[in-house]
Image (tube, rainbow, N blue to C red):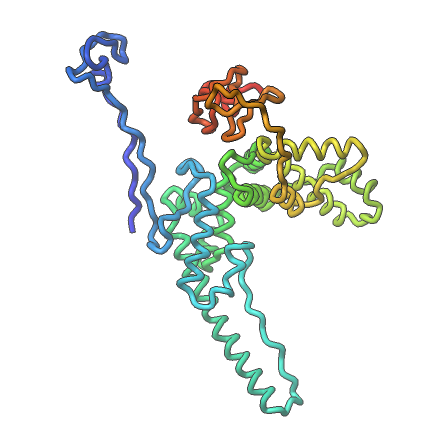
Length: 388
């Protein structure tokens, strides 16, 4: 199936764009022009995204594209999930393939224990022969399934993605072996802007920058946040980056945890706590700011409640319940719910009114950037020009 390439955005010429509807106006080039009689405005046709759907219909349009081909940051995870569903529905013995999409580990079929030579029980022998037959059958299907999965993955890659994969030094060898683990790891690296054929110092710097800059979005669920966070960590570490290996962290670990005398154990403790703090710190502070402040206050009092690992940090976010606020007094003459202000941020009981970066609150205005009420988009606290 050939890839359908989207047409570029169409920009109207000056003769079409110039002029205001219903009378005289000034065009883009600065010259005066005359609009049409009905007062309609010239519009720019929006850019159309790529309509590439891949070669496998059962993947429901989920594809692997380069980072600059799609704005959806979760595309890789969604396509990986669709691949897992395809395997579960279309391939035989799908359970044997579970580690492929979950852990990027080559599936292995456990071999039955060898039968003792002295065994004479016919029932035991028959049972062992049955297990061996099933083992051989599953092994044959596994090889076939891996080749099928590789073909599906390759067919869901855009032309730009295929070009990047084929430029890798070990492409021919890995492709000949239908190495699903290799192609999935390379796809993840390219998707998250880490390409094996780039200058390694630049690539690692990009991977670190992406990891440190990532934060939970206002619309991201906790589960999708942790999935994307873990993907960034995996990409960074897969290509040689390290987390928690700073000498200061390792020395502090050796001092605090006296039983961590082994270097490997100290490294694991430092890595786990570094990831836990990074994950917690970059969670949406609108929802979890109180939790973070409470952890800092507890630590200042000598009570360390910071999570010791990513699982513990995830549990903190899932089980966190924000403190209840006192019911503000309502104005009986007004139909609008009363609001209260704290630390320069305005809250509304029914819906999250947030003041703009200029400190002004517009109750009936909805920002199209963050979709909260209270400010215009150019004054959005989450905007690029917002003051930290």
